[in-house]
Image (spheres, rainbow, N blue to C red):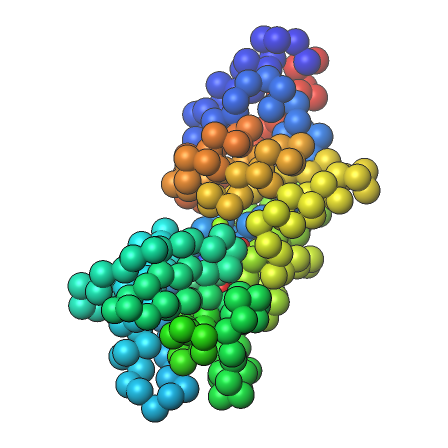
Length: 288
Ligand code: ADP
Ligand code: MG
């Protein structure tokens, strides 16, 4: 395409709230054949709510929420926001806070080390998971379930739910109409991932993928000869966006995601993704 055609394409996209960082990104947009969508905050709203709380010690469930809430008040993860909101009261002070990317968070509350996160995190940290906790994990269905540990033992569980964005299914249908393959990529568990994928019509799911392995997943798709777009919003998504042929970030997302992206979507609406690809196709095939 001529430089003028490329500039016209970039300008037209901008009018639709699709900020394309230069002509190369527009060319890359046209070449894409696979679209990898991050789940939380991209396909879903990322505004989660607590739907279940469990205590495995006989202590009140409110104690589980309060301890977890004290740690999560220092975390920026969508799961943390739901737990902090449900915990209610101003959170107790936390010291030695650590964000465990793609796994959970921990900190010391009232002299006790509190860990909140996945069963895998507990296992890796040498924390005991009682049978009651395993049983509870089997009941949480399509909710994101995290465990809460006090010191070296899991004492409670909290399940949160997210909702898919209103236009996500329409956006996925448009991508398929353009002949593109779609894949849902998430660090969340398989059951949640499958439920969200089914709700919006995404046929392929890569779940329980750690942030570093998200990059590896993108590289594998490229190595298999695909031209891969990654759509994401989070701090964790930056490396995967950078590893893609084309990275698209939701503008409401983290600065890390928008800096790593080739395309920034101003509207919090996934239909901007098929629009961007269709527009790149039109611009670069008609004015040549
Ligand atoms: P996603 O791919 O959905 O953005 P992440 O990679 O950020 O997910 O996290 C994977 C999983 O790790 C989450 O589904 C959650 O179970 C757990 N997790 C991550 N951060 C936290 C946190 N601050 N508190 C509790 N659990 C967390
Ligand atoms: Mg996300």
